[in-house]
Image (tube, rainbow, N blue to C red; front, side):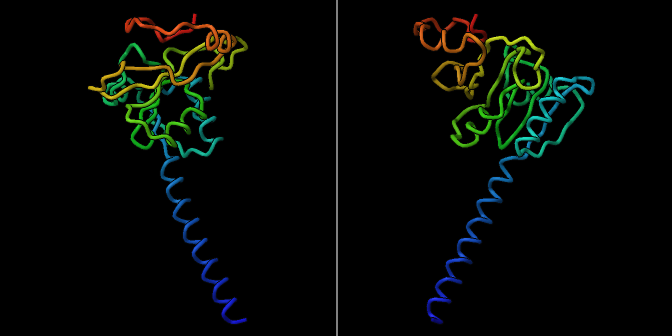
Length: 178
């Protein structure tokens, strides 16, 4: 009986320790710094969505141009806010599911971008829904394109996913589905 109790206690302590370690790693991954304008309402809405989905968000109301440039996101992929999380840059209204996928997969990349301010994206719920792409922004020197489609959103998503021909043209726009 004493042997079984010791085995159970040892197993419980080991489980608790491993859970604590995993919990710490997840908590570290979920901390985010967001650079935005102090007057941007859609940015504040996006921050609320991140917080509602488990991120600890530190907001810096100083604009995002400097943060975007330092992170390695081009102006062409720019939006109204830039977030930094676990070594990645998140530019614009990127859905939380894509951010969590990025943090899980850990690709060699600068981060994700949802260029512009697409209606219907998180924080931009205006009643209108635009089709838009979330882009994986590659690190400089990567032999592939500088950015590639990571996910597609909007009413035309399935139409384009099913019927879009593969592009051989490296200059073809990947910013919008239209």
